[in-house]
Length: 329
Image: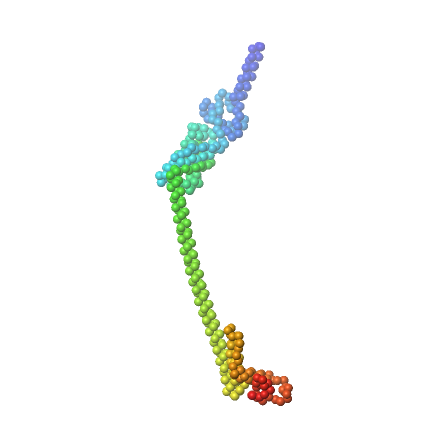
């Protein structure tokens, strides 16, 4: 092999090495920084990139995807001197590769210590009850504080979450007893309020019932008095009519009045429960005579439709008696 051939081969190998040294492929989700004699010059984006061989070199290879940072368990003393153990998780993303590469040394360790410090600071400024019940507020405060501190490094803190808060065992037992006592207290209060409301409702019901009963009694008495008044007025009117008839010498009115009273008396005797046999008094013939008088009155008022079947007219004041239908009294 001649010297010229060797030189060509060396030249080709050198060109290949130069090409390999100057061509850089950046994977998706990463940014590479380029340093020239140790100084940052530019950033290589994902894809095929060219640099000056032997002069430029790749500096930091920064992961631009969102990453998770697991924060170990921290012992925190709360504002009311209660000791709790808390662990958290943080999510961050590199937005500026040169700042993340050259503004801070060991980025992940810096973010971890920053988050741990702020967890103790934020949670230590709160009472235990507030700490256990306002976890969302703690997450928001941590996110705001840590993101503000990491902003000069080109880092965006996307989320900080408290995974768990563990008080001591004796404190948990005390909280359980307190919760039980509070629930029993609420139950007794609710029971007392229910009993009071029931008594009030019963008293209101009794009051309304008494009022309605009194109003009903008053209305019944008023209507009874009104009925008696109307009955008395009717009786007075009837008595007046009968008195006027008697005063005018109408004997038939007297017979009508007496017959009515006899009829009412016999009706009362006949409807008695302890009477099975009714004994007619000797004056029953007078009652029958009175009934005959009533019949005569009716015939005079309404007419008998002609003469008697026997052809002889009846005299005024005559009534048929029992057993002697056509005899005069």
